[in-house]
Length: 102
Image (cartoon, rainbow, N blue to C red; front, side, top):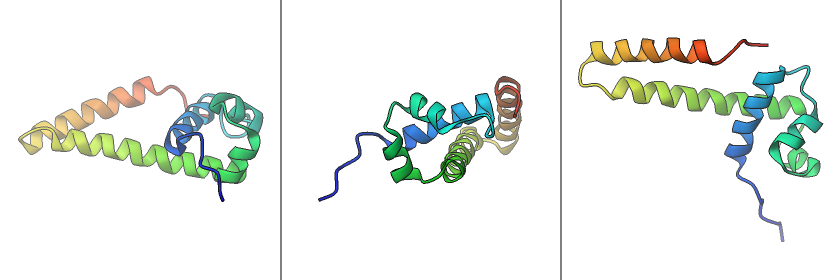
């Protein structure tokens, strides 16, 4: 019988995004990810595969989260103009606070 995972995959992917964002893909080691996630190396490999596969899955998760946030913004105002104004204000804020890309 397979054991159940002691971690939430989405939370792990969110943490991985932060590590990859801070260090860059090339500079991030599997040990960095293991330490940041607080899970065993074997669990990481068993769940996500290689570092490249893990990166791609975390990038996909990041895209889904960001797209949902921006869609929520667009749907939050009664008029299209207000939605678009808020969307671009939030987009600029996101880009200014996200830090440099590596």
